[in-house]
Image (cartoon, rainbow, N blue to C red):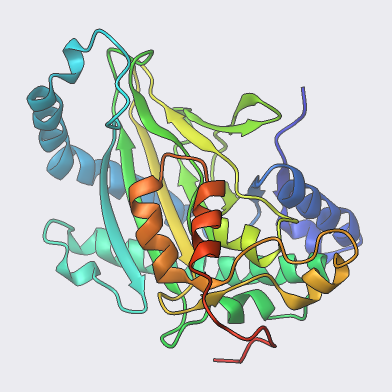
Length: 319
């Protein structure tokens, strides 16, 4: 059994940097997922965000979730439920403009802690993109620039709870999918498990670890790396007891960013396969993804190829 990749970011500052960069490369190329420890985000802040998220669910979301379950008759399901997920969620937008002040039932402490947390996550995302550039042989800043639309990147958070489920064998917390965007940073419950990724035809648990941040790569990084790195199918299984918290932040391209394989990577592989992936405007991909999230990603890429965006491949312009 292979061990799920865990990266200690403190080791990037010393003589183990080379070995740590190799671990990141292997995780990106062969897993599409890895877990970060010693990532620089305050453990006290993470504890505060976790406590406030769980309190918010109990106060503002739990009753609504129970009403939804009752209205759809989910507890009485006798066969596999394939058109709905056993999750309670809300979304926060940070970039290009925040909607945090518009969410009616967030108390001030929660708003403040979440704002602080996402500033740290944004910095971590940009640091990671530069580490990926280094491993890919791309100039520093290339991936960040390639995500920049006219208003910079898009950055948002999906806050989810996966309550105890009486029929975990019939209902998924979240059905299998790849993520449409760029880099995903997940702060997950360290006691209640459920997240799994598909590797070599087998579902593998993403282990809950206290104060870690789980990273996974979205479809856009697969395109930009011309398939060197892949987005990976993952899902959430629910448990008969225990409520699993999940705070997933998505560092994505701006809506009008044009996404295409990095010319330097296409040239490197020109002898083998040339440019395999399409070029397109990120917002067009998201429109397509909205209706096809729980289906295979390859037809999405093919559909984007069919409506190929007429952009001249050249160096990424700095924002």
